[in-house]
Image: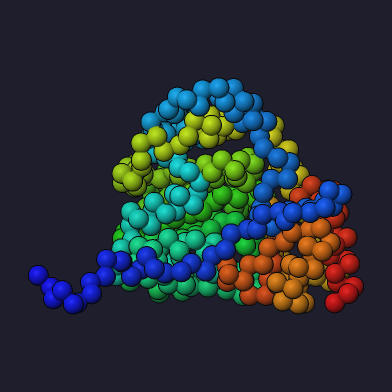
Length: 371
């Protein structure tokens, strides 16, 4: 037995790591006649899928019953949604894309292992990796257009590397990974590296050379794609996400599934949302129309911003992000500082409805004239 005076810690040191990630703020309390436009969390300002809302109402009187013990129904619906490109067994559901990222980190990372990110990017990749005791290697995006540093990533791979996180379109930059670049990188990776392609904003892309991870999964590459119902489908409050991958990888990560993982409302709503083609079409058309409404307004104000493939855009104000955030809130518009994503001096703004975007432009004009 150890000396009774010797203190033995019961805590894993890597679970005491403090996260630098701060989520989006909720709407503040306001006066009854004051309207706040929340353009800080990349939410769908059209609301939620009507088909999802309808099925939730139907399910409200059966909350005394347990939901399906597995995600099988959702996986079958996903296989249909993807027109049979993959069987249902190559999909998995979870409580948000973030939970899937955490499960993947638990499945592949450990003390003395490594993962690679490219900042600026979604910082929970780092949080989940560090909470497994793994080392995070950052190969930053290159240049003013935030291009992926393929050569830098390949040079950073060691025998300890297990995960590579790619985000396309990327949060918070709005940039994307061209299909040829993704192909070049994935085909050059050693077999001990699993590529996680976070494509939760894929519906909003209009680039001709954009690609999801689907072709690489179908080709048997060690790739896991992450998707979410929070953005285009407007179901952020229900926390539903899904992944697809090869039979080998998806069956391995599914070992971390809990019974009754998805609650009955989330499960039913996600399945219904997949069939809501009209709502997705309306949402995508809104973003495509409104970003082209905003660009000339931003140009007129001489604002430094980046064209986007997402439902948000990145800009750099002439004052510090916290100061700019506060000034915009005074104008009734919530925006998001993203320095903790690695985008120094920058703000991310959601593209909303015409009403919200006009309020944004008025707020920007007022703030910029007072700086």
